Length: 245
Image (cartoon, rainbow, N blue to C red):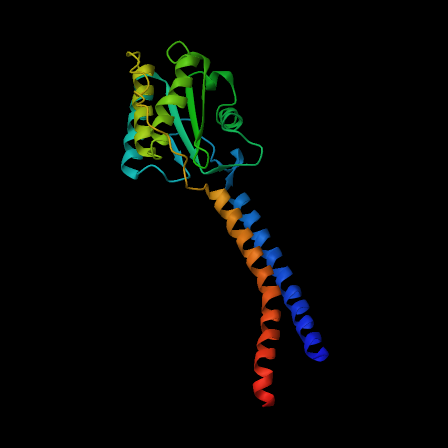
C-alpha cells in the first residue's frame, strides 16, 4: 500500500511539472495575442502629398462597396472645397492609449505643420470599445465647430454602434453629415434617438473572453493534476480485492 501511495504522489508531482510549463505557454500566448492585436500610430501608413487614402479600415468592419462610396464622396468634397476627411478604424489601442491621444498623435504624424492641418478632419474609432475621437484643423472650424464635431463623433457615429454595432450605417451617416456641414449646407444634425428598455448585455468583449479561456485552461489542468492520481488510486483499491480473490 505504501508503495502504491508513493507511486501516486510521484505521478502527481510529474503531472504538475509537466503542466506548469504548459500553463506558462498558455498565459504568455494570451498576453502576446492581446498585444499583437493592438495598434499604435507607428503602424498606420503615412500619407503623402495628394494621397487619395480616405478610409483606413484595419478592423474590416465596412463593406468594400460602402468604403468605396465613402472614399468617392470624400474625394469630391476635397476637390470642391479643399476640406479633407479621413476615417481610421482600428481594432485595439496600445496599452495606455485613448482614442483622443491616438487621433492627436496620428493627426500630428500625417500633418506635421499648422498649414498642413488647416483643412483636415480625422475621425478615429477603435472597435473593441467603440471609442471615438475627432480632430480638425483651424480652417474648417468656421464650418465644423467643436460642438458639431463632438456631436458627429458621440451621436451620429455612436448611435448605430449602440444599436447592434451597425458600422456601415454609422460611417455612411457620419460621412453624409460631415460632407453637408463642410460644404456649407445646413447641418442635418444627429440621428433621432428612440428610447429603448436597456437590458444588460450578456456578450463578453473579446479581451474578457480571451482571459476567461486562459483561466479555464489553468483551472482545468490543475484539477486534472489532482484528480487523475486520486482516481488511479481508488480504481486500484476497487480492483485489488477481486484480483486477490
